[in-house]
Image (cartoon, rainbow, N blue to C red; front, side, top):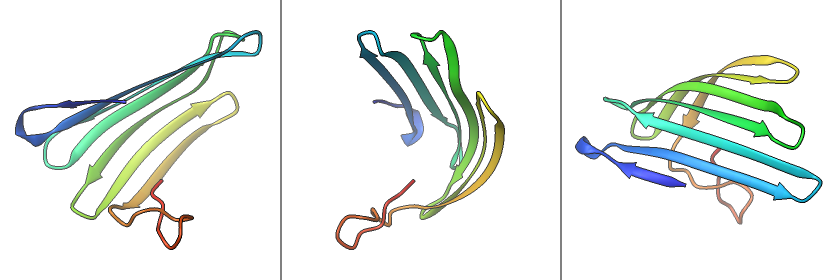
Length: 105
């Protein structure tokens, strides 16, 4: 993961994952989120399978994030369907599943 600080305290994110297992799998996932002003951001991802030469999935979103909550409108495409989602997020609660903590998405 690469976090790119910008003027005004904004930070953008770029993520690149490459997976290779000889004769079994070769895939790439690219994800990016760009912070705009006043808590708004836009992002997207692409997951590509090079071994079978096809697009596994892709998605795009617009997010608003305030101090302890957020909302994200997202669209995801895969080989079978297209989904549109409205996701509400609670920020800063920790993780669920680890000794009394709460896990984020």
